[in-house]
Amino acid sequence: MPSPKKIKFSKLERLLGEHRGKSLPFALFRNPGEEEIHSLLQNDRENPGFTGGDQKGFVFAPFHTGASPTLFLRPDQAYRTPVPGGAACAMDIGPRPDTEAREIHMGLVEEAVREIRTTSLEKVVLARRFSLPCTLSAVEIFLRLCQTYPRAFCYVWSHPDSGTWLGASPEQLMEFDGTRGHTDALAGTQPAAGFVAPAWSAKEYREQQLVTDFIVEKLREAGLEPEVGPTRDERAGALWHLRTRVGFQADADAAAGLVGALHPTPAVCGQPRGAARDYILGHENFDREYYCGFLGEVGRTGPGSFRLFVNLRCLQLRENSAYIYTGGGITADSDPAAEWDEIQHKSLTVLRALQNSPD
Image 1 (spheres, rainbow, N blue to C red):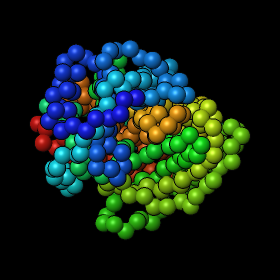
Image 2 (image 1 turned 60 degrees about the vertical axis):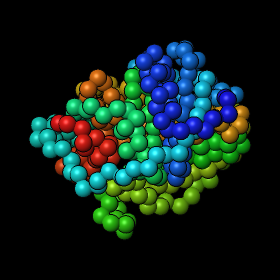
Image 3 (image 1 turned 180 degrees about the horizontal axis):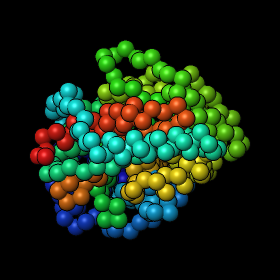
Image 4 (image 1 turned 180 degrees about the vertical axis):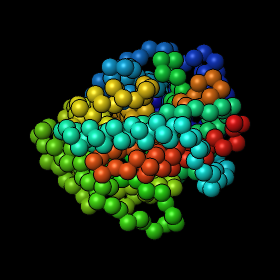
């Protein structure tokens, strides 16, 4: 990978405009806690695929590999630039009311709860997709996400085989430096009311434990020893989650194989994973494509290194519309009305960045 050149954001915008005009792949991203935008541009439309090893670039993987291809961007051009100044989006925007969608989603939750109570299925993540008019550019939305969510992984991905996606993900799938790695179990959601962590219910702790247990199991199956940290409260924008970090030591091949073993985790699919995936594919009325997939940079800190995030709190741009994806985990204790409220609150992450776009 070429060493990233530091350029002004105005020049980067011109380069991106030229790239988009030729329908060539590019990725922009801002890592959590950083104040610098990284941009990677590929000079052709080739998709070399994600193989790990000594690859350098950016991977964009779907929720279900049978439906959409895993894409890999080769960094023919690499740049870095400070995040331009700007105000954060207003946080007082409310969810978009939709009585019909509410009834449909609550019905899906009720059906899933019955399935969980009468079969071996323990948890399933049910998602919703909705659209609204949008005339903002991908770069404008990306900058708003960066300015509003400094602790999230904010990105724009554009590729002729996937279209344009953006997001502000709170969840890291895995980070690996060549010898040591860690992954996060992130589950349980409550809206933030100030900076005091909420009281968590038994349902939310159970949902979190399912994800942690799954990660530990997959590490041990790979012959690795999990190092499980404490479960902590984690604020992500206007939401609180439960997070448990699990560390490990491995070589590059084992770490790359672990990505495939973990994805998709119970946090975005369910448990047991095969049954949950089948339930999702049979009951959701849309293709998730890259929602709940993973993405991130590969090879920047050394051979075999990577930093991958789960594609949550995201949207897809299509012509003059934004398609917003949001979902929540369903267990035997789930309340349909509360589950609807949860996905409504999750949708606010990207709705705030679109609020000046005409309805």
